[in-house]
Structure formats: C-alpha cells, structure tokens
Image (cartoon, rainbow, N blue to C red; front, side, top):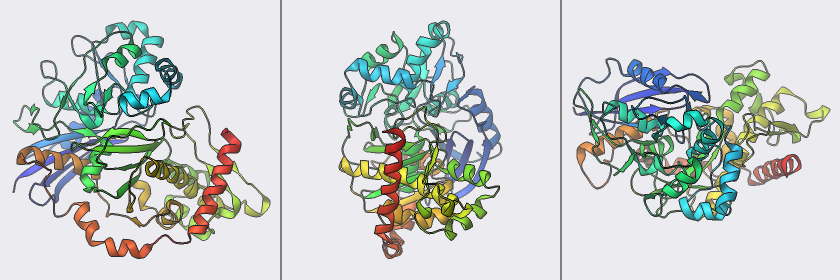
Length: 473
C-alpha cells in the first residue's frame, strides 16, 4: 500500500489524514488544537502539526498542506517572524480595505485587476494596516507568506528553502490575478509602500521539494480549494461549508470578476477557478445560540425542529463577529420581529438556524448572478451535522441538498494533491471513496429530497432581507 498525507491547518486545529493512494481510504488520522484567536504566533501551527503527525507518517511518500486563507505571515531578512500572524477573521484592516478600494478607482477596478474586491479578510489590506499602524515592524519585513505557504516552507527546511504557494491560495491575497496568472506588484507596493518578497506560484501537482525524512511535498493550497478537491466537486456542484466561517463555492471553468464584491473570483487547486462567497458567521452562530439558551447543540436541534419555518416572524441577523459578506466589519448581530407570542426558545433556535442559512442563500444567488450553474448543494462542515440545518437547508437555499458523510475534506483534498504529485498525471487521481463517487451514487436520493415548501423559504428570506435593510440599509 502506497501512502500519502494531507494536512488541514485551519483556524481551530491542525488535522492530518494518511490515505491509500489507490482508493483514498483514510488509514490513520489525528488532530491538535489551535488557540481561538484572530492573531497568533505561526510557531503554534508548527507545534500543532508536530503533535498531530507524531507517529503518523510511517510509510508516507508525499504530503501537502491546505491552510486557512488570507492570513498574513511576515518574515525578516533572517526568515524570523516579525509579528504574530493576522488571520482572515481579524477585521482591524477594514478601513485600510476601504481606502485601497477608493485609491484604485473603486470596486470595479479591483475586480478587473485581481478578480476580487478586497475586504478586511484579504492579505493586501492587512499589509496596509501594518504599514500604517506598526511602521517600525513594517520596516523589518522582507517577505510575506500565507499560513499554508509558511508551513510548507518549514516542512522544506525553512531558511534556505524556496517559499512557494499555489494559484488557489495566492488568489486570496489581493495582489495575484487569477485571469493573468501573475502577481500584481503594483498593488502590493500600493498597500505596503515598497516591494517585498513573495512566494513562487507552483503548478497544481508540482513537487516543490521534500522533508528532512525524504517525503515529497506538494504545493498545497487554501482550505476552500482543498475542500473542493477532497469532495471531488464537479460542474453544477455548489459546496456550502459551515465551519468557523460560512462559504459557498463552486468549481468553474472561467475566471470571475464581480464588481459588487460579493463573489471572490478565486482560482482552484487544479488549474480551474473557484468563485466563492464567504461569511464570517456560520457554525458558531449555532453554538452561541445554544449557549444563550443554556442548551447543548443536540437540544438546540430539538428546539429548532419544534418551531415552524419562519420562527413565528423572529429574524436573527447573525453578525456576531462583524461580517464579511455583506461587508459590515463593525456591526453586531441583532434580533428582529420580537413579539410576546414568538418569544420562545423554539423560535429563537429556529431563527438562529435560518439566519445563518439566509446569509449563505444570498451567497448562492450571487454565484448564480456570475454564471455558476447550480445542480445541487453539497452541505459540509461541522454545522452540516445539525438535523435542524439539514431540514431547513433545502427550504432556505432553494435547491436539492446532499450531506456527504462526515470527513476531513480539506485534509483529504491536500492528500489527494499529494497523490497527484506522486502519480504525475494530468488530472488528480479518482479515488473510489471520495465524495464524488459517493455522491454520484446518491444522486437519486438527493433529487428525491427536492426543494420542500419553496414558498416558506421565500417568505423566510424576504423577512430576513427586510430586517437587514432596516438595520443596515
């Protein structure tokens, strides 16, 4: 049996899976936690990787890293970290984002330049914030990497190793263009004030080096790109992922540029594209709602399922950590439509589920607007395990929904890339246990679920839209 490993270095933890290259079957796996924060010493990621991989890599021939997108890792001329990495969910650069958009001539100019309109999540805005607010530290910076770039670099030995990235993760920086396949150094200099070193963009299945143990290393990718690869997503499959953040994305044949800024025109990990909409608030909306009710997640499910669709008119705008889409980094969540008759735990639980899904339904509409075909929804992530979410999703999203079996799809995508590195083929290997095969077999069942009670879903979304407009214009 030939083995490969995939690493998912996410906001919350480091997960490692070891897979059989012939079938994709997971033979070993482990994880280690990351701190719950918006800035962190990257050394924490390395420590978590070492803990999770300890005793796991015997016989592994190749590995790759999929990591949280957008984070800013700054290095000095000796390769040392200058300051704690700012993560995607750190919104302190919101004003820098607004300034950069205006300076280039507006959202349309950015969409044409790099396929996306920068918000606080993007690396380019964090570089502007650093240059403006911590100039002494900014003066020490000689190179900027993304989280997955930094881990890959450390796996290759660091210091003298060549830093590399891939087109998927690079497309989330705000200074690399998916349509041209080139860095926009002018935008980097606009943000930071001078040129600094950037990682080389490696090919999708390129061997970029090896570890000290002789394990081949692939270029890696961003977490959403890894999930698409791990799921085997195909044309017409739209992935809705409910993790720390909520994402709606699809593999697409063409580069996308959305001047509204709702859709980020990312590249994927295979040479194609991955238009994506991201919200800051997803599964943690459910855990926060459960905590407010003094309940666990299973009890929250029971309460939500006991309420009627629409939660008796109760609407939750779930902007608990600010929001990325819509771009409202400084707002707070709010509850609308309160009346004595609907102030029940059941309705609040239902409103939390529906509020989270309504934001993602808006994202699905935005993908349709840029030409993405929606055949079915693949619902993944920790929040997808909720029975209430599974029941409400077809209603709110307005499309057939399939929930693949539980799996570490980001790590599986990284492992599949590692197997591709070994195979040296034009396309990634077809794994018999991957989500694509399982979901193809489930097509009939997915179609049978249909889109239950479309009118109820439209009514819920209409009230959500009214509440959002009343609160934020």
